Structure formats: structure tokens, C-alpha cells
Length: 440
Image (cartoon, rainbow, N blue to C red; front, side, top):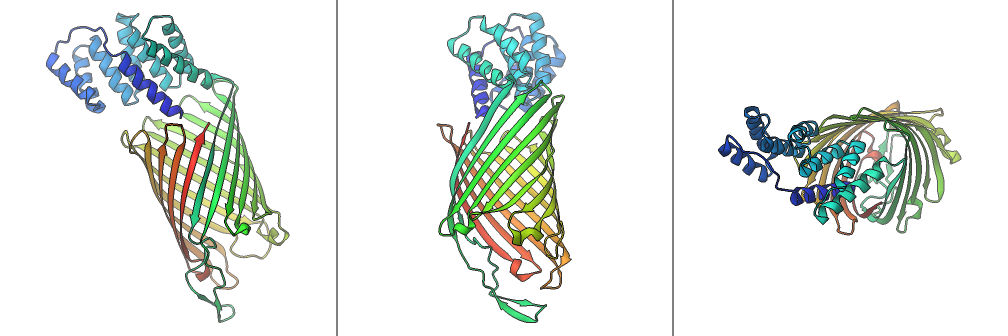
């Protein structure tokens, strides 16, 4: 919701305060062409054209203004600020340029500087809609720079699972250990379920660089006529967050999880989860985290499954255009049991995936994603006398729609195809989910 508010404010300012002073242009034909391209929202081309005009006339107010506006739209905020400051030197009281400069500081998350400029501008006379939007900017800034901030979301929806028990397609299996065929006794079940998620986030900002985060999650899934498949999950994730300059944030986090399956408390786990968010450039963000988890099974018959789990996750978020982003990812997993004689506990896996985020409009977004995961077990299976290896293919298509009341509608179609050298582990399934999400 925050991003939609900012977009709304940008549009209002651009429309309400359009029409600036400025001075004559030497190359009027070239200037008219650059301005035409700018109004067509081809900002890359308008930037090139205005930059060429700028080199011919460094102090021209009109050229600097539209060079700054083009830079702003391309998210080159430092360059936009430089151009606006060249205008301020000549026209120190121009409100339009001051407002644009304040917006640049805001988009850079330099909230103190932005607030100071917006407060100064409030003392001047403006159209009523501009005054209201200055107040909205100030409200957002106050929320951003306050010591305590709260956010979260509630999601509720339904999901259809075509193969609830992950039943293998084969009707019988040959078991090498016994040299006989066994009938596949797993029930072929499809089912509907309802699911709910509540996420609550608290952030305490100690200073500009250091914050303390507390994140809570509650998940419930209730399966029709199959209550033994119900899932409840709770997670608490505190973290000390440190911001290195403006482009690198590291969260030094811990987590404590608890999982119920059916009505039985199945698993407690805890560990560390440091996370890294690095803004490499205006159109490339790198995200990574390392998760070390200690699993403690609460059912006595499962105690041999107690283990240590390690995951490393790396993803890139690359902006290709105003409407399209690509998100490649790679995930390494490793699990080792604490003891016991069970096989098919210890494994290594590698997942590679690629997703797209396509913004069809301000209300509609589409997210296709493909992943492949290779999972290799470390011990010889006691029945099949080989080391199990799975190849897991996953195809996902997610669509979202933003309703005017601030609720997000979400539809998810997911297809999984698991191949394995151990017959009972082969299966195919698809799930369809419809959810409604309310951020707060």
C-alpha cells in the first residue's frame, strides 16, 4: 500500500505544479523534440536529448529541469538532485523545483532532509490539493522516522490439492530387499482446504543505522474430511538490523518455530537466519540468507528424525523495464540426522529457479516461476538398496489484483512433478489457491 500512496503523490505533484518559469532555449527545435519525447514518457530518450542540450547550455533552467525530471523517472536521484540544485542557485525561491527536490530526497529515503524541505514549503501558499499532498508526504515520513513502527497482513483463502497424500502413480512396487512386489496402499485423495495467515511486524529504530525487528507469523490449514492433514505453524523471528550506508542492510536474525500436524505437536525448531539485502544499482537488488536450524521432533516414534538443517538462498531482482522484473534464484540445502538408523534423512539438494514479475497495470500483476531441484540422499535406502535421488520440477503462476478498498486478491496455480529412482517417491500433483490479503 505504501508504494501505491507514493505513486499517487508523484502523479498529483506532477500534474498540479506543472508550468515552471524558465528561460529561453537556444536550440528550440531540439528542445521541442526532447519535450515531446518526455511527454510521451520515453524517459531514456528524453534524458539523452536533454543531456545533449545541457552540454550546450549548462545553466539553462528549462533544460536542467527536464533533465532532472527524466533522471527522476529513471530513478537516478543523485543526478536529478544535482540538476535541481543548479536551478535553485539561480531561482532559490521556486516552489516547483523545491517540491521536486524534496521528492528526490524522499525517494532516496533521506527523510530528514525531505521533511525539512516539505515543512519549509508548507509555509508558502499552494493550491489546496498540493497542500494536502505535502501533508501526506509528511505523514509517511513521520511514520518512517518514528522509533516504533508496526505493519503486517492477514490472508484468508481456499486451496484445492489434486493429490493430498502425494500418491505415486504406480499401483505396485518391486522391493529389492525382499524380491517381491508390494501393492501401493497410499490412498488417492483430492481435497479442499481453507487457510489463514497472520503476519505481524514490529520495528524499533534505535538510530538511522540500527533497528530491532520482531516478526511473528501464524498459519492455519484445515483440510475438509482429512483432519489428520491439518497444519498449524507459528514462528517468531527477532533480528538486529544494521544499515551500511544506503545500499546494504544486514539482519542478524534468530527464529523459533513450532509445527502441529493433525492435532499433534510434531516439531519444534530454532536457529539463526542472517539476511542480506544489497542494492547494487537502481535496477538490481541482491537478496541472500543463511538458515541454520535445529529440529526436535516431539513425537517419540520420530525422535530418530531429529536433525540439523542448513539452507543458503541467493536471489537477484533485476528490473528490465517499468513493467517487468526477472528474479533468478539458487538454493542449497543440507540436512543431517543426529543419530539413529533411519535412512533417507541425510541429503544435499540444489534448486535453481527463475521468476518474472510483470506489472500489467496499477491493479494487476502476474508472477510466473519455474524451478528445478535435485535432491540426493547420503545413505543407501534399506529397502531399495540404492541411494535415493529425486528430480523435482515445479511450475507456478500467480496473479494479483488490487481492489479499491485496499484488499489484494490472489490466485495461484502450482504444478509439481517429482521423479525418483525409488518408485514410491514418484508423484505428480497440482494445487489451485484463491486468497484475499489485507495489508495493515
